[in-house]
Image (cartoon, rainbow, N blue to C red):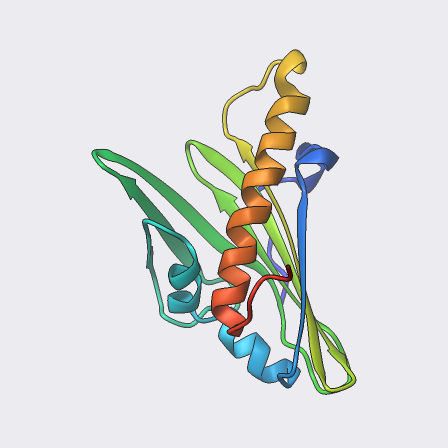
Length: 165
């Protein structure tokens, strides 16, 4: 299942993309189920609650709400590509973020490997407002660092793994 994306990934600077990889002793279908359960995402994202159907699916719409004191950031998202893995073929999930403050995309792949599967989570988050050319690189690098840290936590919470040391 593929739908029209909410954003154009070409608008996201290449330096904004963070990549997190984990190899786990889970069948691809088991890893997929964990990755598509909203409570697993919530467990890894500090100060954030997830709103929507507990299980993601094709064209699912959901929202992550992060609260720090009186400040609230609502991050609406939509599944724009859904292809579950099999025991012999990789699966892929694309989530577009379309908030008023932040936009972005998550590309998540689950590949069968000997003894389990490999999960690759690629994510870019970008301000929804115009970023002047002079600030694009520092904003992209900050986005990549923050995304890498956050989505490693989310991935580890979902898969029951620890970050490599």
